[in-house]
Every structure is written in structure tokens, then in C-alpha cells.
Image (tube, rainbow, N blue to C red):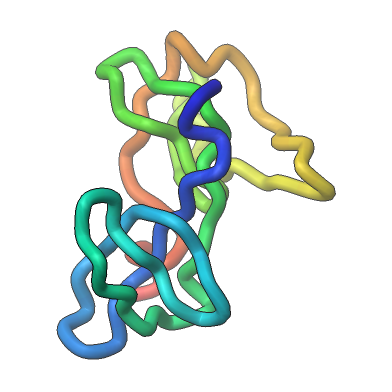
Length: 99
């Protein structure tokens, strides 16, 4: 759970995803002393868990359950709702799906 306080967001200057510490509308990457402005609607907090491929799971990520149903990770007051993290595979997120 060491990654629980990481955040992910899409940079405003180049639309690339960035992961790091969230500070007032910016995300600072680990090992980088720069903080980048991000689209506030794309910010999601890390759950501290990994999917079956070892990818960190963030709020807003999407996966398919064992029946093929599309599910989204939702977090409310530091509590995230989803099933069987170690057996799920993240396939995208709600922000990329809007395109």
C-alpha cells in the first residue's frame, strides 16, 4: 500500500498521463522537481493495489469482471469499491473511454 497517495492526471500542455504527488492543480513526478498542471477532471488517486499484470490501479480505471461486464473503480472518502483486484486486468479508464 506504499503507493496509496499517488495521483494520476492528464497534463494540460501535452495531454500525456503523469503520476506523482498532487499539489493544487499540479502533479509533481517522483524524481522530477517540476510540477505540471493537469486537467482536474482526469485526476484519480491510486488505490495502492495492483492488477494481475502488476499495474497500479487508480480511481477511474476500468476492467471487465469474470462475466465480461465493464466495471469502473470508484473511490468515496478514501474507500474504493471493486472486486478481486489481484485477478482483474485494467483495460483503460473513464477519461480515455470518453473519446
